[in-house]
Every structure is written in structure tokens, then in C-alpha cells.
Image (cartoon, rainbow, N blue to C red; front, side):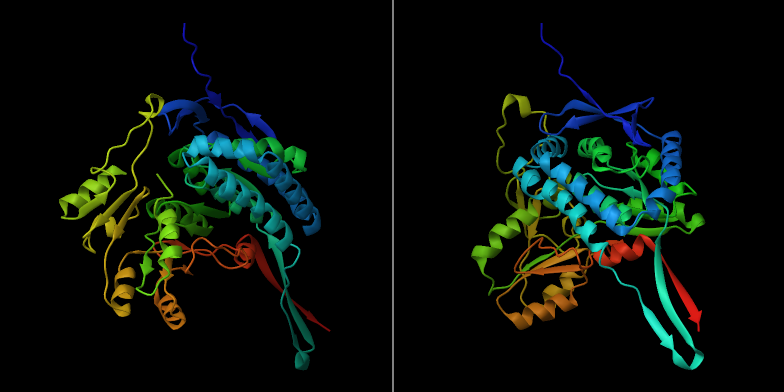
Length: 433
């Protein structure tokens, strides 16, 4: 008799304890299509408990010195790093990315997020001015805001969750985090390490569930003064509407349609492999059919080549890397974000033309420019309506500098200085002497 496969059951993490939920959501292994995990289907009750725990923990945590908080963040980084392989295996199985990518990018970056903000919190300065004629000195002071609501996406689960948690708690805030219900396992694993790292109960609370229930309850809660969200533009519009009555502070990192501009003097030996990685990093068939209906030509991949899978993976969410040519600029494939291994190739003649076409989409998250002409690189980068422009490289990040998009790709920036300013309140103090 065949044995049923064990299903992992996650629990919310509230006030330093794992707490079961009354209902659960099935989570699927994308490589097999089978249910392998059950995620809490949290709502107002669970969010209320998490916010209460975070509020109770705030006075003690916010009173700790930056050095004390830094030491705890570094300890948590060490614990995740010590268990890197288990985290990488879980991230690969839960999200569907390659084990190599999880092992070399996602989990190391999650570790680095904690280490980076553990260091940066020790080096911020404040402003000071003097009005000698008035006998006054002015200076600024910054303090944590309170309970931070953090909502992270499915594509870089632990990578982006820690990108929010690390600066929030480094600044002295407490948090209620809601990871994507589709990729929750590594967040749950991280919770197991918090007490050992010295994180006091209630400082980090993780509530799992759907955005429409748990996410909305978090956004609407009157005791959560700021929301950091990474996800779709449509969801961000709803977050903006729901948070408006409470005048919440928002950081919204949203969708993108990132152009890769390759000029005729580009180093193709360097450009092509990098562009392939950037184009096919995520795992959508409807867009390919739409493109064909609009007159585009599929050069390889979906609908052209066959995909042979082992028997155990035939229900999995696999798709061939697909390249589409002869696509019109107004096509949905050129205008909308495709979260799949699909790239469109279009030719251009002039610098002016390609800038105009690249800027014609509603998004403005990132772009890449490939050229050996230094003057051209600077000209094009300056005129592209993108929050980040990589030239002759891709995904190289200095976390000191701002990350975020223009237009429909977001509101606000994240990075050492920007995150510090977002997660703290500034106060101007004047002393007359």
C-alpha cells in the first residue's frame, strides 16, 4: 500500500510563539504540481494578535541602543548562514527557482541584508545648524515609528522579506510581516531562529495568508502607521486607498517592464549571457498566444519546441524559455509585465528612437544598456525613465544607494539612507542659549 506524502503545516509566529490557525491554504510544489505545504489562512483575528504583540514589544526594543540591535541582527545573519543549504533547498522547492540560484543569490542576500543594516544603523548622522544672531542651535533627532506592516512577494521570498525586516528592526521598530501565501516556508524557517538570535518576543511577528484577508487587515489596522509593500501595481492602488484614512506612510515597490537596450558596439560575449539570465530568471503561456494573434513570430520555446519531462514532473509548472520577434510596441507583450521566461526582441535604428520606445511603457523600475561608447552610456542612462539603470552589467547592487521605480513602478526608495528615513520619524529641536 502506497504511503501518502507528508505535508508540511506552517503556523503563524506571534509574540515569540508558533500559533496554529483555524483554516489553511494549500501550497503547491511547482516542480510536481502536488500539494506539499499548508499555509495559515489568517485574517483580522490573527493580525490583531500580531499587532498587539508588536505594540507591547515596541517600548523595550526601541529603547535598545543601535549597537545592541546591531549585534542581534548579526547573530540572526550568522544563524541563517549556518543553515544556508537547508534554506536554499526549501526556497527552491517552494518557489520553483533553481537550487543554484537559491544557494548563490537568494539566501546569501538574505544573510547580507541583516549584516548590511546591522552595520549601517551604526553610522547615520543628524543635521545641525546654528543661528548665531539669535543665540540658537538647531539639530535633528530620529526615532522609530512603531509597528511596521511588511508585505513581501513570491518571486524572491526570503531575499525581499529580510530586505524589509532588517532595516525596520534595526531602526527600532517592531514588525508584522505577511509573506506571499505561495512562498511562505523560508519565512517560517527564519522564525525558528529569532529567539536564539536574541530577538525579544513580539519584535518580529509573521502572519501567513492571502493578501485579500491578512494583507488587507494589516493595511487597515489603525495601530500600524507604515506599510512597506512589494508586489503588483493593482494591489498597491488598493493599499493606497485603504491606508489613506489613516494617513499611513507607504513604500511601494511595484511591477516593471525592464528594457535591455543593446547597441551595435556592445560586447556580445558579455551581453548575451547576462541578458539571457535577466530575461529567463522567472517561471505564462497566454502572452505567447496573444503575441501570435497580434502577428508576432515565436522564434523558439512555447508552441515551437517540445518539452520532455520526467513522469513525476509532468504536472509541474514548467515552460520553455521563449523568444518572440516582430512584436509591435503596443502589444501586451511589450507593455505588460510577464512573470515568465519570455523575452521580446525588437530592432531599432537610433539612440533617440530607442529611448522614446523604452520610455513608452507605464513602468519605470529598471533598464540595462549595453554599449562600449562611454558618452552614449551616460546620455541614455540619464534619459531613461527608470529608477535603476545598469550599463554593461545586471543586478549589481550597492545597498547604500536608492532602489525603487518611477511611474507605475512604485513610490519611495529603499536603501541605507532611504530605508532609515522611511522607518524613522525626524524631529527638529531648537536650543536657545
